[in-house]
Length: 94
Image 1 (cartoon, rainbow, N blue to C red):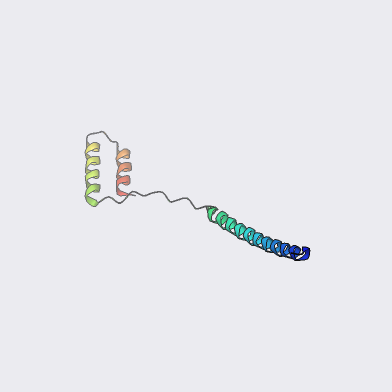
Image 2: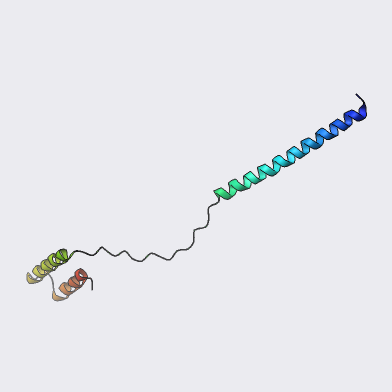
């Protein structure tokens, strides 16, 4: 085989090899960027504070029972009028 023919084949092979390497680098870079984007955690937005939790409304029977107990404690002298009024307002939700 002549020297020029061999040099020509080497040049073509080198060109093909370079093109393959360039395509692989481009593909791998795109895959790396896609992986990095998938792993990136979006920033957590600042949310307003949650409103205070309100206890579920007690049934009317439970309220009556609590008011009855408060009345008994007041009648027994355990609660003062101010304490009774405060607790009554809490039970009634006022």
